[in-house]
Image (tube, rainbow, N blue to C red; front, top):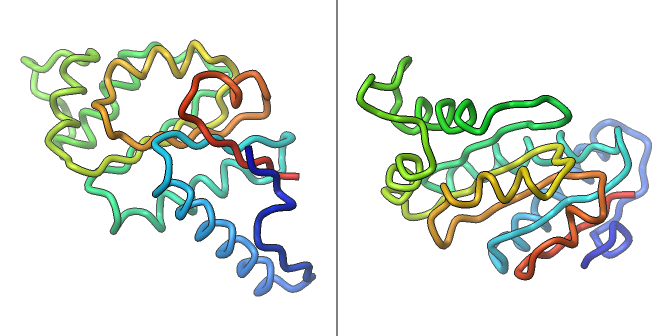
Length: 165
């Protein structure tokens, strides 16, 4: 587990330097994503986990063949809604063809066509959210999670955590 104090640190007041700090964080976390298929950013509410995840998604577009993001939070998204949204994105269409069923097997087979995949699950409150999506992710999919809960960050095995303070 990595803590915020272990990340490159620049203490400054100007907006430019704040962007520089974020750039350093993005580069450091991107490097961690190269070493692990599962990384969790954990920290208090409002500290910038979601913003950092969005910056990482944007910065990673050229490095991955598919980058998918979804914010779960406390909303009760049905998992098929997430699958449907991601299939629309991957199939590059405004409406998925009617013969495509938004389930784990379909998303798995579509995702498998992209050699390098990054999936970002933002604002995860419960490990069950991760476990519900995991069957749709082919082996080798890089998973980045943001959460405020240590039990979510510590669940599973091949996971590294970066704590934002």
